[in-house]
Structure formats: structure tokens, C-alpha cells
Length: 450
Image (cartoon, rainbow, N blue to C red; front, side, top):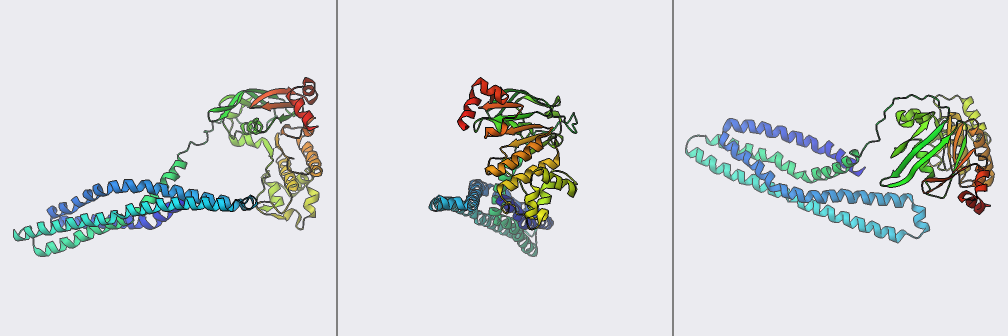
């Protein structure tokens, strides 16, 4: 944001000055040529001479300007982080260390800034010096021409005035060189971001309106960067089945869900929905077939009614109330002072965590997607609320293909298929009773909890 601000202010202020300077230079050159082409040539020679003299200075200072923008970004990042994590900073007695870090980055910013300003400050006197040399040269050559009677003294007087005016816009441009250089440094950082590779282009060859819910992974490979996380994953899920995914933290459970939703592209293999490759669908069509209830509750600044209706365009009040009843949220909403018109703040801190979770379930109920994803939806609530949420989720999963990620194994005993993941691989699959009989990793996990 600092970089964009810098570019913005330069375009507003310096650009007009730059255009004025160009127009002035062109006008003056025309006038000077009408007086004496020879003297005009002497004046214009000072221009490449100036550029040649200031190029090494520009190069050196540019490095420091880039440094200055980078350090400014670091400083702002540090302030933002310490400010938003204020309670954690206090709780862990981190104030002195945070302050020392700030001082260190601030000092580096000061050094980079002072070097950049000092070096670019040399440009102005260098330009002045070269401008004055050409001024002396014009006076000498002009004097010779006057003695030879090839030009009048009045013309020389006018020409000297023009030559002064000619160097003025150039000197002005040199004056704002430090602003222009910090803008170039800022632009480099902005373009670095803009030049990042875009999300893979869509190749929409199949249209899917409402899926039946058959999902299959065929030889799926995926990794973040070089390191492969999932290798040769094969899963077949029938319409209406509930699939539970269990395993230790970092086993790749959430990654698998992200691949289903196409938040990431596969390295190899394919994911099929109703026999159609998800890469041949538009992301929009694909995601319309999924509903998600996550561990993190996404609620927006607005009324409870608007938050539930987020799941469906043009939802009627009756549909919103019915979805809330299905999600066991209707009762607590009606006890709030403004009921469904209660405004949630951005953090949603005016209702409890469990209540937030029920609202996100109501949103998913209203969207009525054929495939549901439930990722650790009961991890941050008390046991009583968990019972409510579990009931709401059971209602939500009726007649749909569901993918459930859970750490509490008691919640997934009734799943049609349980996938046990470890380090990106499905190491066991089957029903709850089958896996207990196998007495493998799942049985060990289950027995460690009970």
C-alpha cells in the first residue's frame, strides 16, 4: 500500500510538472533555432552531457531507494502485526523485544533513506554546473559571432535568456529526481506482484448444473512446490455417501478438500464429479455444487439474516427462517434483541463461537448444495453445543455426498467410508467396524481417545 501511495502521489504532482517541462523545452528549442542553429546545438549538447554525468549517480541511489521502499514495507508490516496481536504481545511480555525490533528496522530505513537522499541530492548541483558551462560557452561563441557581425547583440541577449529557460525545466526535473526514483523503486515492487503467474486459465468444455454427487480421485498427485504431499490417491465415493477423513495434523486432510474445490491445481491425475473431470468445468459451476462449513467461521459485517442469505441469491425470509430452524439456530436468534436483524460486527464477537458455527451451517442449508464439506466444524465449541451442531449437521448431510474431517472420532462412527490419512497417503479405508477389526492405525487412534 505504501508503494501504491508513492506512485499515486507522484502521478498527481510530478507528472503535470513533467508535461509542462517537456512542452517548455520544445517551445524554447523552436525559438532558439530561429535565432541561431549553431548556438542551439551548443545548448542541446549540454543535455546528453548531463545525462552521462548523472547516470552513475542514479544507478547508485536507485539501489538505496529500492532498499528504502523494502524497509518501509517491513516497518509497516511489523507495526501492523504488533498492533493486531497486541494482547499476545502483552501476555508474553514481548514489548521490549518488539520495541527493539522496531528500532532496528527503523534504523535500517533511516540509513537507506539518508543514503538515497544524499546521493540523489548530488544530481541538482551537477546539472547546475553543466548548465552554467553551456551558458559560458554560449556567451563566448555569441561574443565571437557578434564581432564577426553575423548576429546582433540583441539576439544574443534573447538567446542567453532562452538558454537559461531551457536548463530550468531540466533542473526542475533533476530536482524531483529523488521522488521519481522512489516511485520507480515502488513500481518495481508493485509490478513484481502483478507479474506473478495468474491462476490457471479455465478450459470450460463441460457444463454441470446440479451434480448427483459421485466423486472419484484417480491417481491424484499434489505438492506445495517441489515437496509432494499427496501421491497416487485413489478414492471412489457414491452419491449420498458420507466420507470421513481422519488422521494426525498435517496429514493432508484439508489439502484434499482444497483440491476438491479447485483452490489448488493438481500436479497429476484427475478428480471426477459424476464422471466429469473438474478441470473441464468452470470454477464457478464446480463450487456451486459444494457447501462448506469450516473450523473458521466466516461471517460478514451485516445482519444475521444477510449472513445466512449469503448462501443463496434472492432467498425469501421464509427460506432463511427454515434454514435457521434446520440448523438449530432459530431459537437463539429470536432471543437476541433485534432477532434476525441483529447486526454482527466484523469479528462476530457479539455472539458466541458455537452460535457463529450454527449460522454458517444455516447458510450451507440454505444454499442446498449436492456435496457438503465439513471441516472440523465442532472443534471450538462446548459439548452441549456440539450436540446441537451434530444434530444440525446430520440434518444437513441427509441425501447428500458429504466429506467430514474430524478429530473427535465419536462424531464419525456412522460414516459410510472412513479414510485414514498419514503424510498425504490414504493408509486405511473402510467402515468404523471394519477398521477396528483390522486393528491398525485407526484402531490405535480410536483407542487413544477412548
